[in-house]
Image 1 (cartoon, helix red, strand yellow):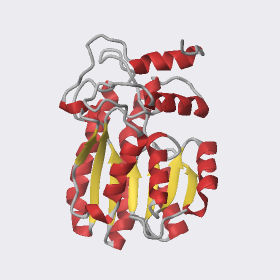
Image 2 (cartoon, helix red, strand yellow; image 1 turned 180 degrees about the vertical axis):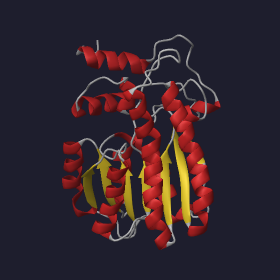
Image 3 (cartoon, one colour; image 1 turned 90 degrees about the vertical axis):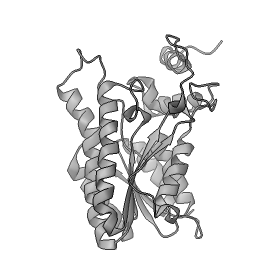
Length: 287
């Protein structure tokens, strides 16, 4: 399936959270451009099915990015299977713990949010950099968010951790540049993924249905009047993983349809996303 003359021909990538959403779109994009990819995800069967579908260019490993040992093992798997590591895409995440600042649960739910949203990214940078330093090259990409740039786009802890991802991206870029390693962040805006289902306890098929229907919604809060797609993030990740970006590092690349340039949503109006999630949850068909 790999393109011999593709933009990532001969390159090896690790993508966390690669079994669904933006990660899945990026796996498909990278393989189509000639890369071999190791996918890390907690969704075991969808991940294994993806590897079966795409063949020898894709390896799946069950991974919980909140555990440093899992992230280290994922990097080791890439080197063992394919001999090198050219791109580490620290993409796995979820909405984290919610609540107002006076109500946030600072117990286990909080600690898991921090570990998944920030510590997992740091572990990915740490273990990928060790391999890439020996090679003298590599691209590390971290999924941040517009919520890390401005208030009001996500829960408090999620937003704070995404700000931290942007910060560690910059500081790691400064340290690792002398080794030929680039470190960049992608800040998605409103992208059609199951993260907008507000932590509903759905199975994989329902999440995929929600994401597909979300893509079809007309009009969003961004100046570009469509919902963002996983493919939009995959395209940016492709640029950052390729040799076209060898002088680009320490940056946050916003992919949001212009959302942060000026929101268009009417204050207090219930969003079409919330209405869609409620309809799927209740089993109601559209009228």
